[in-house]
Length: 582
Ligand SMILES: *[C@@H]1O[C@H](CO)[C@@H](O)[C@H](O)[C@H]1NC(C)=O
Ligand SMILES: *[C@@H]1O[C@H](CO)[C@@H](O)[C@H](O)[C@H]1NC(C)=O
Ligand SMILES: *[C@@H]1O[C@H](CO)[C@@H](O)[C@H](O)[C@H]1NC(C)=O
Ligand SMILES: *[C@@H]1O[C@H](CO)[C@@H](O)[C@H](O)[C@H]1NC(C)=O
Ligand SMILES: *[C@@H]1O[C@H](CO)[C@@H](O)[C@H](O)[C@H]1NC(C)=O
Ligand SMILES: *[C@@H]1O[C@H](CO)[C@@H](O)[C@H](O)[C@H]1NC(C)=O
Ligand SMILES: *[C@@H]1O[C@H](CO)[C@@H](O)[C@H](O)[C@H]1NC(C)=O
Image (tube, rainbow, N blue to C red; front, side, top):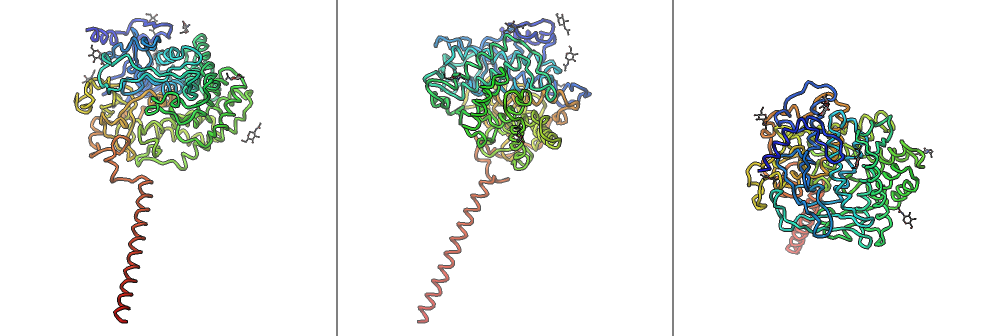
């Protein structure tokens, strides 16, 4: 019964120093997610606001829940067990550890790299929020759990493991019987993947900046979270440089990684690699102060026509963030040779286009047809995060304030100011989702009965940001509907950065505090969703623009046919009358 013992250890760990291999010492009082009912109780406010602080804590706690490998003595999640501790051994590698990507047990390097890059970048700009909330030691532990695995996945200059696949037999169950050994897929000199290598390089370089305490500009941004460790920063930087060279100069040429590893295509195929190259080069330029990296970043932006591939910011598509990062890097270091206002202008063009032409669900979530049909919150949160960061270096006060208020509206939406009264983070408030698509939290062992067995999920997956509502703003909380209820490493990343920022700036409680138990049940939708999983709920309600255009075309065609037939009939009548008269 050591599962029970672990439970006690986690909850009694209030007086030990809990030093784990070289990480920052965790706080004397272990942070655990507060009782859900406290998510509907106002605080007495103040700065830092305790509710924003615990929100940040919950969001980080999610990564503890997703851990793979041998859990440390400081494990805070009582229901998690060691898992797959021999991962990779059959291939002669040590690939134990790291994180499960989402609701099943796969490990994916490409989205992991994006999430780590995003978290490190955010903790560089809004690090004071982690410090004020006493979350910096947990941030350190979270980052190292990912980065130390990424280091193992990069055993030599020209090898990077890109996927360890959950078995094909659709395993849905707990963490003690995950089928193994599992297939390991990697890119190599002859079979490279420019995007995956450059994406990992960007993560290493961004996190190296954080661990080196290299702030962008003290006037506009706060100091990085205080977890400085120069030797770790150096280790990360050397992996970043090596992976960048691999991306740029692999003997097999430049190509998307699914060209070499087709097995990744269905889950995380990449649309292009120019954005990852440019972003990696920029983070490296900032880390090393070398103009050659900076020149590469500008050259790639033009060469790969990134200006015209500028829609969402996510694990696949980084261009909107590239213009923001150019602005930050040049503002902090004009010696690199670029023109700050050129990049500031590009970032503002992107943001202003969203403010002027963005499309929304009826209840106000920024919505991209197609990109938002699955996990709708993610594109909106990523835009909000970029705007929040860029706002202080915008070219006018008006822009600063419109970017900040746009970000705030999207944050409020995610925290429950929506037509469903649902804060889209598990375990935060009585109205939070209860059926996240997560094999390990569900407690079920039969994928065929995923929605009903068990009726209530066995464990609360505290802190997990779920996919989000459908395009009509409706949320159904169905376990099998991965489009709305799945969780993932990259879904939490932008919310972490936004929460850290609000710990610094906001003394009033986050929106969800106003939502009392039962608020969702009162407005819970009937029928079925309209999203990437369910199509039956797509009829009725507000029709998408494409549907309206299609219907207009059909009506026009039908109208023309009717008109044509009428004319023909009249002519026919006339002719027969003339014939009769003749
Ligand atoms: C810095 O990190 C390295 C690598 O993890 C570790 O060996 C070292 O003890 C850390 N130094 C401090 C002062 O924490
Ligand atoms: C935490 O515990 C350590 C060792 O028991 C002690 O030295 C330190 O003062 C404590 N810190 C706080 C803030 O209580
Ligand atoms: C959470 O709080 C509620 C209401 O105060 C209480 O009934 C419940 O037992 C608490 N749950 C836990 C796990 O402490
Ligand atoms: C952080 O820790 C300090 C020292 O233990 C404490 O005074 C403060 O209230 C804590 N802040 C939060 C938000 O937990
Ligand atoms: C971890 O192990 C305990 C007891 O052995 C079990 O009850 C629990 O469900 C396991 N957790 C998961 C996520 O499978
Ligand atoms: C790529 O190879 C060229 C030619 O050997 C070399 O000059 C350049 O520095 C390499 N680029 C990187 C990023 O390693
Ligand atoms: C930077 O670009 C702006 C236009 O975006 C231009 O007005 C300005 O002269 C340029 N500055 C330098 C130093 O080239």
